Length: 201
Image 1: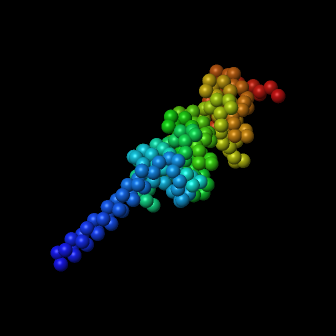
Image 2 (image 1 turned 180 degrees about the horizontal axis):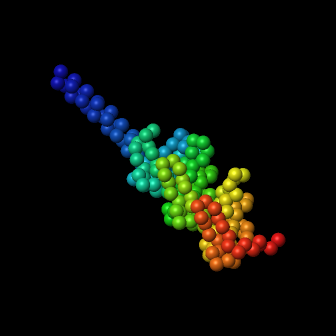
Image 3 (image 1 turned 120 degrees about the vertical axis):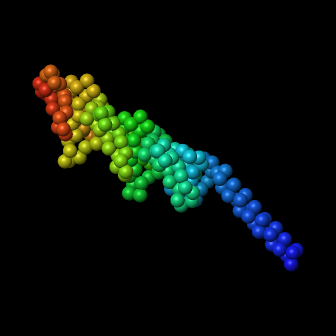
C-alpha cells in the first residue's frame, strides 16, 4: 500500500511538474513568436501585453492607470493612454480611442496602430472618463487633424487667437481673421471672432 501511494505521489508530482514546465514555456513567449488566437492578449509584465496579430505576437503597451492585469480570458490591458505607432487592440465595434500620453491628442486604433484622430490643445486637453474620450480642441494650429460632422462644423481658434479656423476634410483650415482687440475667443460652446475679416478667396 505504501509503495503504491509513493508511486501515485510520484506520478502526480511528475504530472504537475510537466504542467508547470509547459506553463513556464508558455510564459516565455515573446514578440515574434507564432500564435493562433488572433486578437488574444497575455500580460508579460504589469505594463505590457503580448497581442496575437495575424498569427504573430507583438508587444502592446498598457499605459493606462491599471496597466496589464489578469490571466487567460480574464486578461485586461488598460489602453486609456497610448503613443502614436504603438500596437493597439481594435474595439469590438471596430473602433478604439485613447489619449496620447502628453494628453494633447486623441488617438484612434487603425490597423492595430495608434494614430492621431484629433489634437486637444484646449485647456481641457484629452481626458478619459469611463468609456468616453473627451478632446478639448477649442484651440489648435492650422493643419492639425480634427473631427467634424454635418451637425457640428467645429470651429476653433488658433493658439495666437488671431484666426478663427474650421475643420474641413479632417484638418483645421483658416475661416476668417480676427483683428479686433478680443481676437478669436470662446464663450461657452461658441467661437467668436472680433473684427472679422474674411480670408482672401
